[in-house]
Image (tube, rainbow, N blue to C red; front, side, top):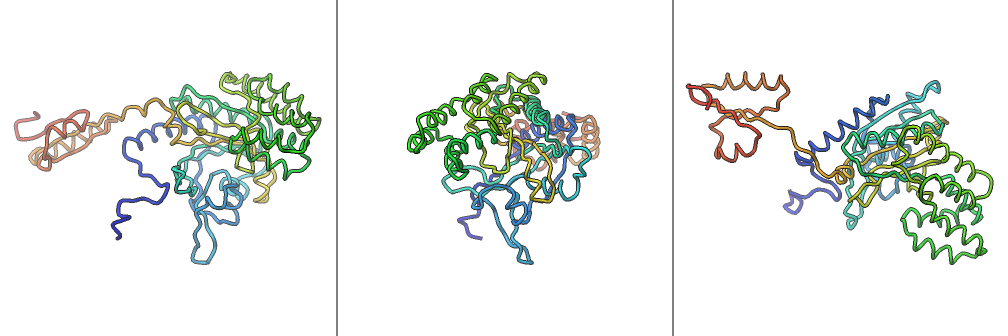
Length: 391
């Protein structure tokens, strides 16, 4: 083994030490419980998928896919997201058109990173997918569940930004004339490069009115009053329909009692090209990236032979932990130090305490080199040594 790589990990991969693992487990368990209480059932999909199906449907850039060949020469990928694998599973085995599917997952996904990026190439997502429901109520339920799950995980200070892919696309095409030109302008929104956006708009051969419409678009952030402002920028058609959906969505979220947690931001777009309608991002203090995101993807299942509406969201566990003010306290652990004479007694005592829900470590005292270090490592230490009793 080369000494150069003896202690190194592949680019973007990380070890998870006990304290962080326990914090992740607590957060994950709280969110899983909430998702189950909302009627979502957990599933698993394989880490490896075919490139030609899930890989191409995932909407992750090709250079970010981890690829390998199987023994038959087929190109495989480590799953870069969970929505595409679940769409494959739903279309092939689960969706029967009668009742919407409510599926949940907690899994690692893999995206190759550039050396200078400093971002993880493997990270855990926990999320849900509602497949077979094309109503705005379903979109609202996704947002309400995301809010509720984050609260259960211990996060209190956060905000959801809500937009609509259809509105952005329709407005840009109406003004710019072609989808290619619309995509070129949309790239600035992906990058949140608003200075570049403004400079690009100024360079376009547009009338002053159309240029002003595109510049005013950047100001469409706020509460329900944003719908009225947006309506003044877009002509009749799909753009108006998208705004009607956002108005309905606000009413749904308000009925859930969570309108205080959302703001409209109609400049939101996603690098995930399968989104077709309402979408949202979750932001919390101290984290420069969204800790979660979701939206409607009504055309993704068509790639797997089904045509139906779908919506969902995912939360990044690592970013959620960053946004929490504390990782919480680890559960107390008791150490029972025993000598050979009292080994059986120690084993019995440990079994009794574990039955009561305690975490108990057994340690032969002959293997302990430093009693003070041992005492400091555990919440409590019980000595069962010698023949005269505990001390």
